[in-house]
Image (cartoon, rainbow, N blue to C red):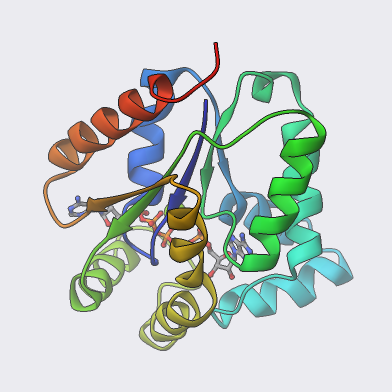
Length: 195
Ligand code: AP5
Ligand code: MG
């Protein structure tokens, strides 16, 4: 099972992925987490990418794809994974398609979590007072939202054209959102798949 979560910052990608990990028994692959861990290692390249993240900009496509490819090669990803925040550009989507095609794998479903911008800002500022993410400050949040609109939202058409996109109303309670996600995943896991 390979599921992609697309959503602006604060939409609930991480929250819902964690729930789905238990239900589907496949790991979460968050490029945000992978990048933050890599930046923390403190290399010169990592420092440069860290500045991008803190400014709300995307990391370079090929760097992200190589991190993803490395993670996908680990045994626990053999049966699939949940892509949290990847791909985020059309180039990344094409790179992922090529990578999966080489392994004769495919994406089962793409979930688009939709939440109004004012609610996203509210959620992230609330999280900022609890956690300590360097990119959860007002200015960077606005830039992350802008980057989503300009660079990531074109992916919605890309996956819609392939019949993979399911739009989820992400404004309801975590439990209600999860119930809808489970329905969408169950449908796409069984319909139209060669067995
Ligand atoms: P990433 O770590 O992916 O961050 P993001 O996309 O900005 O999203 P968040 O993690 O902030 O939000 P989320 O959707 O996971 O929501 P969450 O569940 O936490 O990426 C960080 C950076 O890394 C990027 O800006 C970029 O620089 C770089 N990067 C990452 N991937 C990349 C890629 N592929 N290519 C290039 N660069 C990349 O929820 C948010 C809050 O809301 C939480 O406090 C939660 O408790 C709350 N919440 C969740 N659901 C609900 C609900 N239903 N109701 C009320 N509150 C809720
Ligand atoms: Mg997240």
